[in-house]
Length: 143
Image 1 (cartoon, rainbow, N blue to C red):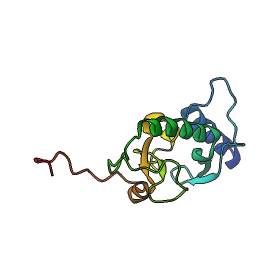
Image 2: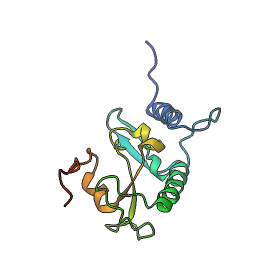
Image 3: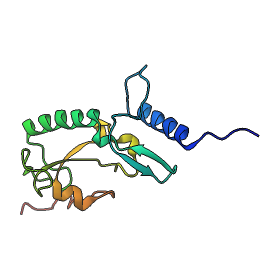
Image 4: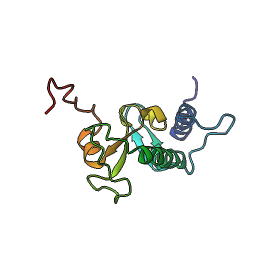
């Protein structure tokens, strides 16, 4: 009878696979140390690290914030260009990095720049892990 790998071995294998998918450096050895806080993955029953607490994520967030601040990028959800770029964390109008494809359902896209948008804190929280509410669209008249 083949021997089943223990939980720790499965966790390390899963974290290594996730690191490969999220773009860790080629040739580097995947590790479970120093990549952020742990969370439970209900699909696989394993513990994995949340990439938003990693240095890679923080660096990507800072770079995108600098670019978007220079362009005064509007909120991806509501369309208003009133983001407080230097506001305090968790304030309603402060900048938050939004993931159109949520980290909960697509954890492998958390470090993908194509899945990152600027948003207000309130808009990002109202969206949660679901899809963004549809906009009003194009109006027939100028209001």
